[in-house]
Length: 239
Image (cartoon, rainbow, N blue to C red; front, side, top):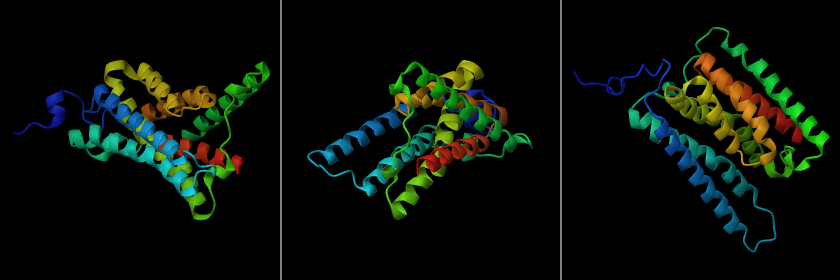
């Protein structure tokens, strides 16, 4: 009888604790996403070279969605396609516990609460350069493009980021590092991926909370719920 991938790698089924892709696969996925981000930033810089006008709304929309599409591609190339596993192995299946969808709300409150305390502390010491910057309202554009950007930042982006950072990256690190260190490492990468120094500490804590949600439920849906709610709240405050 032909052996399947899981038998060859001597691991538990993808619905259990471990997944077939390795930490090396995850690092390759991160490298692909990082390279894509550099190309996008470089392309934007070249596009704006010698131009005094702001970047076109349509160009901004493309720049917002492209990194997320690269995350999906990396997850598919180094995870689902390489090991011929269903997308449910990336955390898209039903949460493990019946009450799993109640867990996003304390996580959301904890994430927002920490962000608030961080802002208060940074303001008190006068380190304004470390404060999170609000999303500029003009960055979203107008009309249909604005709706598109809100949908990406508020819904599509959180779904893809949970798929990549928790369903793909965190899951890959569980076997070599164990839950605690895997959550720490994936949260550092999640935080660094947002580039802005002002959000790195709050996003690191959010990453830890979202990692706990994934480990508790073995699904990205509770994390997506908390992540999307927080992004949509931030967008509503910046509008």
